Length: 137
Image 1 (cartoon, rainbow, N blue to C red):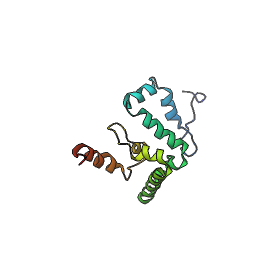
Image 2 (cartoon, rainbow, N blue to C red; image 1 turned 180 degrees about the vertical axis):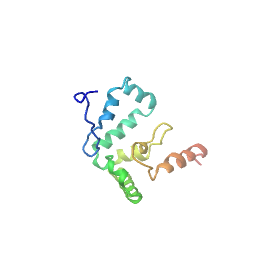
Image 3 (cartoon, rainbow, N blue to C red; image 1 turned 135 degrees about the vertical axis):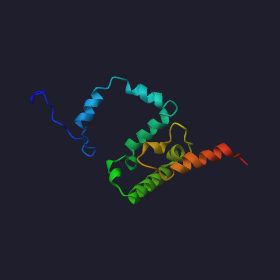
Image 4 (cartoon, helix red, strand yellow; image 1 turned 180 degrees about the horizontal axis):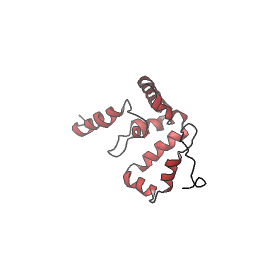
């Protein structure tokens, strides 16, 4: 490869919204329909997942951030508790979507966030067990 055709390597940065050159090169080689693949793996929860993604974009309190990976355990716990508190007190629509809707085998809203959520185990295992092994009595 001659010097004139060699591309300069660009390092990615979430903070500066720059895609790494090698990652972009792989994305450009994609020879399948990404939307079709997405729909194959999320057949039942498309609407729910799309709404969570929309909320993450539109609501500043729910934005995902690269700084998560630099947080201490205590900072991660505090971030999660702030987020859960925000979701509960944001309004009835948020409360219904995020707390009163049971997770399915395919998807639960906490899966769209970084790390292990404090209520994740409770919602995905304990509540599911109650539903499966108990009666209304």
